[in-house]
Length: 269
Image (tube, rainbow, N blue to C red; front, side, top):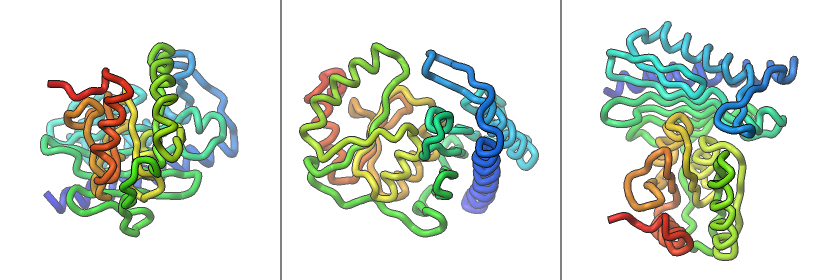
C-alpha cells in the first residue's frame, strides 16, 4: 500500500504544519485565555489544543471521510476504510502553556498491520519529523539515524513523569537509583519530541509509562525507522502504557538495569 502511504503522509504533513503554525502564531498574538484540567490538577488543556484537533479532524474528514480518528481531546470517529488516525493536537501542553519550547503536533495513520505513517512537527524550532513504514525517517527532508552509543554509563536518557502523585513518587525513587549509573537525564516534557530526538541521535534512551496511544504512535514509527529498538519496560511489545526505546546496543542493558532497580519492571513470564 505504498501509494496510499504516500497520500497519508502528504495529508498528515500538511495538517501538522498548518495546525502547528496556527497554534504557535495564535499564542504569540493572543496568549492563552482558556485553561482547564483533565485527569488531575496538573493535566491541562487549552483552547489551542481543541482548535488544533478540530482543524486536523476537519482536514482528515474532508480528504478521507471513511477513515477512523482518535484524538486526545475527545475525537472518537469510527471508520470503514481500514485506516485509523491517532492525533495529539499539542503534545506537551504544559510546555506550550508556559511558553517553553519542545511541544509538538503529532499525527499518525495506522492499519491492522501497524502504523503506516507518522508526522511530528515541533513549531518552536520549525522541525518536521516524518516516517513511512519501511522507508526510513526524515528530519526536514533529510535522513536521520539513532546514535551508536553502546556504553550505558555514557547514555543520555530522556523520560517523563505521570500526573498521578503516587506514580510520580515511585518514579522519583527509581530515578534516584538510575541517575548515578548513566551519563545524565533529560526531562523535556513531551513524548513525541523525545522519541524524535532519540531518532535524530540527540539522546540515547527514552522510557516512560502511562502515555496515551496518541502520544506514542507517530514518534514510535519515526524512532523505529531511524534504527531504534522499542519494547515495553517489562519485556513484551511496546505499548503506550509502557515504553522503552533505545539504540540497538543499549536496549537490552537499559531494560536489565531498570528491572534491577524496580522489580515491578522485571520481565513477566
